[in-house]
Image (cartoon, one colour):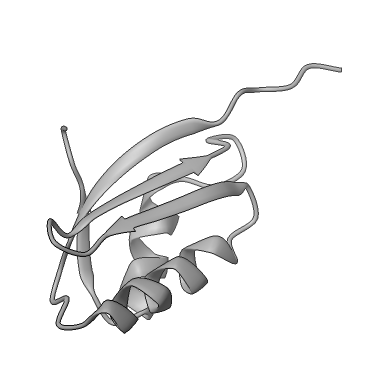
Length: 77
């Protein structure tokens, strides 16, 4: 049995207005199968997600952030 290490992907999200926005994103993204960790940086709009790429794609993560009410995109840094 082979196990794949989690990958960390970084996203930029727009539209944060309060700290409760952080909880909404963490809740939506954290529900996805294959997500092992979520960290949202309120001040910078940065969303760091540890995930298993063979289980959940970055597009699915962007969609989950969208379901929380925020526009997001994969970041190069």
